[in-house]
Amino acid sequence: MIREAWVLQLKPEVAIEQYEGKTLFLTDDDEIDFLTENLQKAELIFDKEGEIERQKAHEKIITDRYGLDSVCNFGYTNISKNFEWVPVEVEVKE
Image (spheres, rainbow, N blue to C red):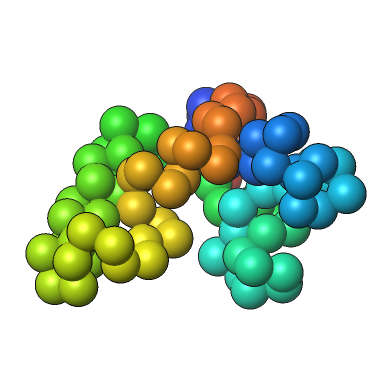
């Protein structure tokens, strides 16, 4: 069965500035700053809206605990600033 999913791709302007223009995707495997060039290793997100809500909740927890100037790499603000949502089709075994 084919399902729609999403991956987070580093925005081109960020990739050019920091990673020599490479096409990079967010991964849960810490290869290089949680980024990979291999689409097969990219973190698959099946519930985009749910993931956005989790990012916002994570950001709120971090800022409540450590203040507004805290580093929150996986919060909504940082993710939406540096990544774009790219739809992909995934074959899922039933």
